Length: 161
Image (cartoon, rainbow, N blue to C red):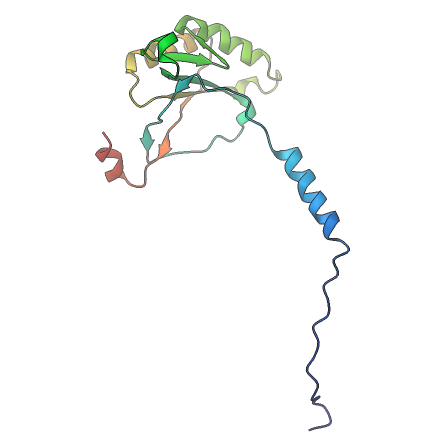
């Protein structure tokens, strides 16, 4: 039996570090290619309402966003809720032209999948949201989503009301 056992402790081989710079640069390149930088300046404050049944957007490139909330600069724009379309504040009447323009930017084959996401503040009146929806109907943008934050439970949802 002693013939097969060795008394010397086995040494752990050294890790080959020659390929580590290649791996680091591969990861760096991957994240540089896949990361998108947000270049939208938020002009309105949006505290999203809470919901329990939430689904993620599958194709964000086919979605355009309309932000509704109180302006961050209340001295210039007042304290009434406003509509933000891309990087500028607009009127409800501007929504139709904005959505048509955004839909035209998308490939014609993908246009039936075009969606509009409304990110509205929890304190915005439903009348303003209804007016925006009417403008979306005029623009034939019938796929509308409402952005919300996840509620941990239904009790939390009703407690926040």
